[in-house]
Image (cartoon, rainbow, N blue to C red):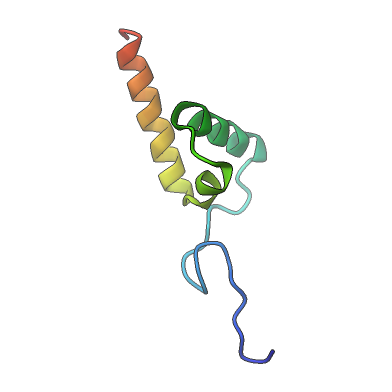
Length: 70
């Protein structure tokens, strides 16, 4: 299989799929938070780039704050 590129998260040789060494507990919290509020499948959430996943977490938090009157 000489010459074949190995697929990696995020594409073939493209940008990576996140930050190396990101705490696993924090990743689980983010995934659970997004899945709970948006009902997105696990695979879809895990495919998000780190900064995109963090952005969704922030946006959900803003929505929750507004809804709670804070």
